[in-house]
Image (tube, rainbow, N blue to C red; front, side):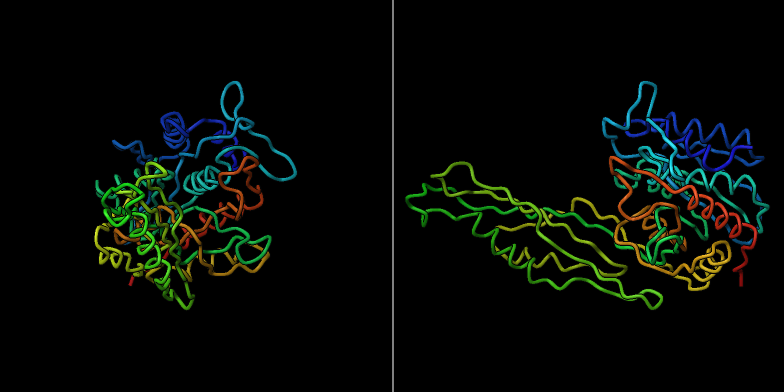
Length: 360
């Protein structure tokens, strides 16, 4: 019977940065061969499986797409994978094929006390396209454990439980002016000057903040790029400013204030939603399971960046995040995951599936 480390190695070896089809095929075929579940490959490429029954449904959720690899991570027949010092190295090991493998094995082995759902989405790295498509098509579990990283967040050697994370809103401020010769600046309207007024407005905005299950979570907002002007002797008639905002549940910075400046408009380019566990009992249930299966003392923690849990929570699913990846591992040239953390995640997922009881 395939174990979590071996399955992780198989998944990591399959390139899935440009096309997730092969990885999805492997996951679908494995689930059909290894489980008695009803397995679906939806029109987006997501792999979804279900087994068991109960008043509520619990989903183990991941994604099988990865960011583009470094040259050192590519071999002749796929991605390079290496096991050493208790870790698995390779693109996607941490983010997040290791947790997908742990969820697949837990799904296979669990005798669930609920309807147990496994879902591995495509397109997480490009804005959650797979999760959004599944939700639009009716994917709506009552509860979900999303297997993004939560290991070593509070301290080394533990897998924590994330009860809230920030979202990301990316915006572009478009500024119009009127061109003129630079020798007669008063004949035009300098778009860069107007842009500096907009930047000052952004700079003075208060960061959004809120409290989730007793934990304070604070966002941020920052100007990250500016572009304008066509020549050294021309008053610029256009300028653009990029703004990166980290949002919090029910909290956004009032960026629309920049549109009070003449010639300034705001365009929201991306808005990845934050997540907050909206039922304390579920956060406590997963936390108690995490505590029971490991020697260390995990904590309920916050995560600084967005995951597919945001889309699910926005659609009404009660979520937490719990997975094997550690801070600083995802998207790196030496990306790796701890096999001990993978085993912990397997134990957490299986225990939650077999002891799930929140109805009423």
